[in-house]
Picture 1: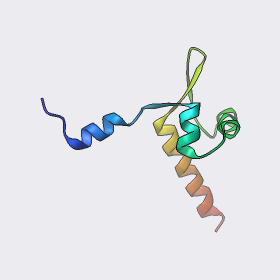
Picture 2: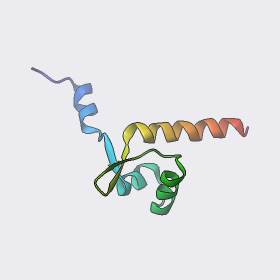
Picture 3: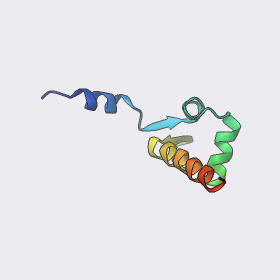
Length: 73
């Protein structure tokens, strides 16, 4: 069974980010990421004591920021 280039790229993308990875991806500080999680603006899941941010939550958060930016214009 052969894997296409698009499938290889998709498989290379993480499904869950640790907080440190979300800091890098979103360009926010660690404390801002935890504040976003605390206030519900950035969804997360817990596995044991580890908080993990789904890639879909990152996409949703960016879309939220874009909508909010459009409202202020």
